Amino acid sequence: MFRPFNTRRSSVRAFTLVELLVVIAIIGVLVALLLPAVQAARESARRTQCTNNLKQIGIGLHTYHDVRGVFPAAWYRIPSAEKRPGWAWGSVILPQIEQTPLFDELGVATGIDFPTEATPLTQTAVATYHCPSAIDRPINASRDDHGKANYNPVMGTRAANGMPTDTTPDGVFGASSFTRFAEITDGTSNVIAFGEKYRGRKNEQSTNYLGGIWGGLSPSTGWGAVGGFINATPARRINGTSEHAFASPHPGGMMFLFCDGSVRFVSETIDGEALEILVKKASGLPVPSGAF
Image (cartoon, rainbow, N blue to C red; front, side, top):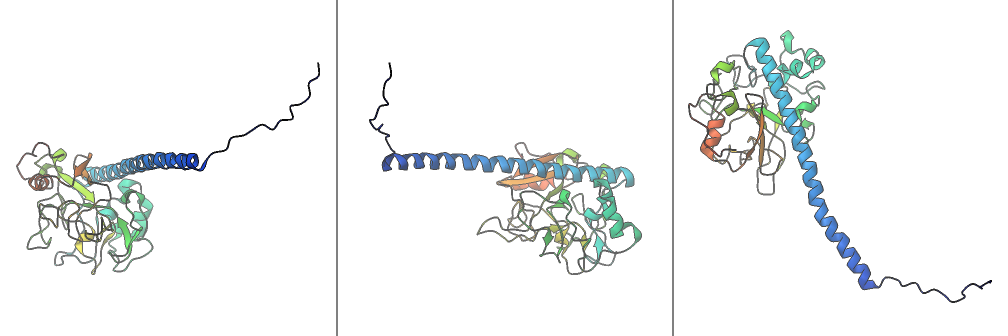
């Protein structure tokens, strides 16, 4: 039997203003909960890439040692100069990190000295030398506009007479140094080779760090551009107050490359005595338990 359409209007209940505000509030809470998780996941991925970069540098250092019998120096200088033009670690290991064309173009092996002013070649962005968490630009304006390096060799705890004039500081690397594995008597798994350096500010109260470069030293570029010291003083601790301090954009500490090629995260609150032991190649002291 045919039935006519129902001519009555169907009532559709709309959201009230209160209900709409509740929904918006719930969405806001969910976003607020999700955002830190997303940021944490991104930082975790960046730390993984940072770890891989340091491992690649470690492979480069070991390969260099296999070929030459020594680790590269922090930088090379003429005997009568402290910091005058000279190629740095980042230039001499380029062939060991699959950057031979750049090495050849720079002329590192031809006797040509490191240029006193930045060139397009010394400004080259070498991805292996860049921490993905660092916000500094590829060209380090604090270091004569040369290409940045967010990683630098650790030269130990102190310099001779305040400057690294000697070739054998208490760390593995120095000016024109020639350190062999056999000289790292504290054990390669217990001695730090490289740490992080970036050009930036940790927070409103802390130092504006100058960061590092990979190419070498020019007359006006301080040696802190290609190496540095770490010790228990506030200035030279992890994320210390010195503008030359080893500093990391990773929250709470820093990634370090050890001489055995391993990479570990070390808290910025590490005991000062333990920190100094870790950066000496022959302290003769055991690493205190709980240092990591």
